[in-house]
Length: 236
Image (cartoon, rainbow, N blue to C red; front, side, top):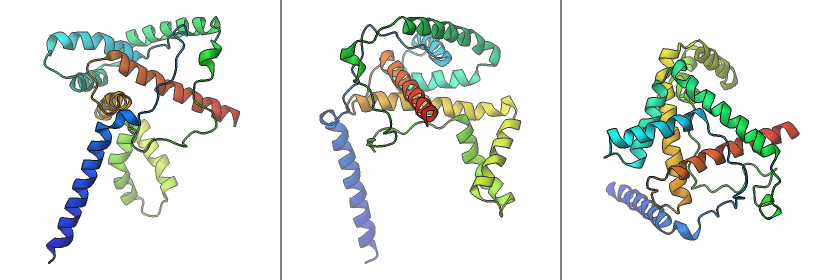
């Protein structure tokens, strides 16, 4: 008799998985419409990681042609986490040069009215978000916190959550760069997986093949969202 409820739970779980698969299969009917972009608008500046990704992707295509898009993205993230500060300098300079280019082009750009009002409306951050959309990846710091929060709470049983947070931040600041490599890799892998998940989500649940532009578009939209959030905070 005790096996009845367990069977019910199993069937319920199976139903949920089936519903999720059905949603993915029919996602194109409910997919979020893409933001209409002005083809003449300045192309957003690439981050250091994006420049590195371009170089590394070509190398991996030759070294590991058998890898799929997700595996390539994860490998790029892993390699980026292992690049030291001197190695990243080249890509930081490339990114800064691209930012200067973007700033100049943006200053001389007149928005086309046809595209100007097709973006997101400010003041509604956090509302009407699709619960099925991929969640943002954790940063290296948050991976560190996940691993060490329990130990710090155990050492400081009388402290509240808000008092624990500064202790975690202090430990992170004092953590040598060599020991941060583990968390940087986790964050890089999470970001790579997130970019592919978002590209797949926007493609109606259908896996995206090796389309670098899709991943770059995800990164551009992430930066746009961050800029909008900063602007809203400044207005407040």
